[in-house]
Amino acid sequence: MEAHADYRQILKAELDSRCGQNPRYSLRAFARDLNLSPSRLSEILNHKQGVSRKAAEKIAKNLGFRETEVVHFCDLVSVKHARSIKERQDAHLRILKKQAEQEETKTFQLKLDAFKIISDWYHIGILELMNMKGFRSDPRWIARRLGVTPIQIELAIDRLIRVGLLRRNRDDELEAVENDGWIPGGVPSESIRKFHRQILQKAMEAIATQPVDQRYVQTHVLALNKEDVPEASKEIEKFQHRFCQRFQTPEQKDLVYCISMQLFKIAEDGP
DNA sequence: AATGGCTATCCTGGGCTAAC
DNA sequence: GTTAGCCCAGGATAGCCATT
Image (cartoon, rainbow, N blue to C red; front, top):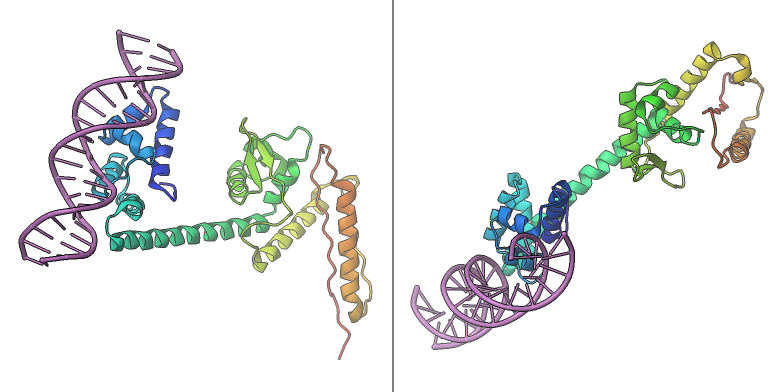
């Protein structure tokens, strides 16, 4: 059962779902299945009448809810219609508790998703692949291009949809969602380290497998003053920004490339 | 504790309108 | 004509609450 603020929303959603599955299903049919008169159900759905906890329990059971869902449904009813203040307050507290639990689960899932997205390079690969000419939403097609398994791609797509970086349009085709580059849920530093390790691994593979005319690998070793390191980092950042602006243009592309630059210490001056 | 007023639920039955 | 959705009236019932 989805989280709704109102028990009427649950009933309407259920009716809607049943009508979707069976075009001949109706409010009357729903009333029959819930063991209510059609007029009574109509009045409930249209805020003309309320429901007692006892009646709510019967309805929830007729909807096939699990025990905890029955209680939650009854609480949503009680908070609106219970006659005693205490019963309404108790139901309200239970609803708040349940909402807090659901929020916690959702936040945790988002954090896990964000962690996976930044730490497994092919998530970003899928998003970049979408800018390619002839992009196909077929996980097998994407998997072949990125060199990972279709299952990994399917899971990655689900994850990207959950965090709101991807969506499916009416034709079930994947679409990137406009965003400012921020991944919901925050990104733990360990996942960023894992991401960089994977990219370096990919660079090593490229050196071994890609022809020279299809890759560009340049390394310079130079002596630097400690106080110049921040400025050097800033210059690399500026270059990468300029580079991406020049090539990340709206038209369709035919390849996905990775530019990765490192500036790190390989030797220190002696004591 | 018993009582009565008040309010809301629950149900029945009938009727209206619109779509098929 | 049938069906569906909605509306209304009216009565039985149940729970709350203040008063006695």
